[in-house]
Image (spheres, rainbow, N blue to C red):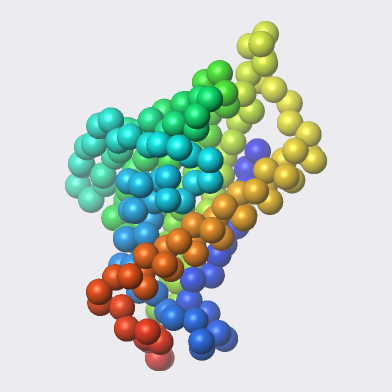
Length: 172
């Protein structure tokens, strides 16, 4: 299943909502990578097992503990642009990728694009499982809700940052 959607961060039509800077938004995505338990419902614990740096890309190898099962993933942080998280197929799920990109079509008007590529887990006979359109639709709705929750948490983190000034926004 492939699925993507946008969440608007700064909206000139909503003057009462504090605008975030690209740096604040990026800080939130980095926090999501390093401390995913604050962002992912049902995630009990997360450990960064290994880190790497190549140019402006930081790589985290993580183990995510959901209680009855664990998932290992690799998350790449492409500085102030995007995060890419890849999960290899395992007994609980098929391989998948989540890319979260910062988009700025007009200066200061920030968006996050969430792009999912999800393959179903293999069945007991090793054949990839078939997903129903109803199941895919429920999955998409759950992803949207989780992504909106992520943005809300990023907003809360941005408000707590010392350089934030309430009501601050760029006027064009």
